[in-house]
Length: 111
Image (tube, rainbow, N blue to C red; front, side, top):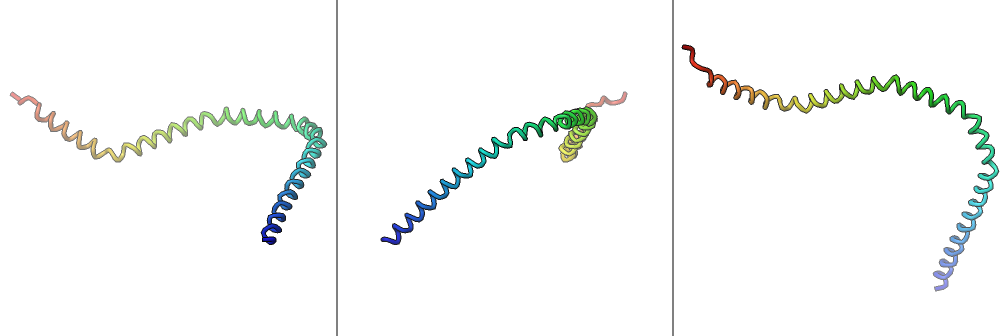
């Protein structure tokens, strides 16, 4: 029985230690974040021209590649449509043969 109580006490002590360590690390994170925040702002301000250049290049590339993308999508759609219609070719042929036979039967006799 005392072994079980000792195990429970160790479990409680371990949970308390984890809680204290989590609190300590949370405070350290908060301190580092508060100290380094002005440096982060300065770094972002320094990199702002590069960010603007990135957006300009992305805009130009999007303008150049958009027509190619449209052509590729249309070609892909045509390929998908043909791929879906190819298995139906025997059905289309059968319909054509039936239509041709009916048309042949409806021709008037030559006088």
